[in-house]
Image (cartoon, rainbow, N blue to C red; front, side, top):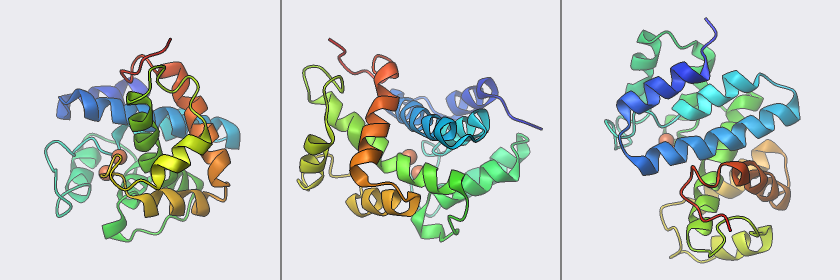
Length: 187
Ligand SMILES: [Fe+2]
Ligand SMILES: [Fe+2]
């Protein structure tokens, strides 16, 4: 079956009450969808994958469970293996090879979308005028959004084969239309 966004949103919100986690899912979805369009791939399928990549984080907040223990739940709900395997591949500790464009894109968008979101939260106009230069500067400040793994941001862009500046520009552009949903100021 081809899963729909509506179905994925229903699954996500059934397992995820946290507003911050829902917003993270929306941010990664927007970035991943933008790349699906750019690459001429299946936008709905890529969006579903991104929306669900951390769906079990609230019930499995530790790496001995997330995301691997979420996989059987998704299987039970009827999601195809291509979605499930891509979700497993976003977790470094599982060492699932990122050997498809979807896997590379999800990995590249996950930490960076989170980081750009964090940058926007401390700016008076959110991400409306955010530029790669200031994102890169913040990446070099370990205390800022300390939970974001810098090495994964850099490796993600590298594996995707897109220059970090361009990748940052693309992700900012993808998030701008949903800034309000992400809780960012827009004026
Ligand atoms: Fe995750
Ligand atoms: Fe994530």
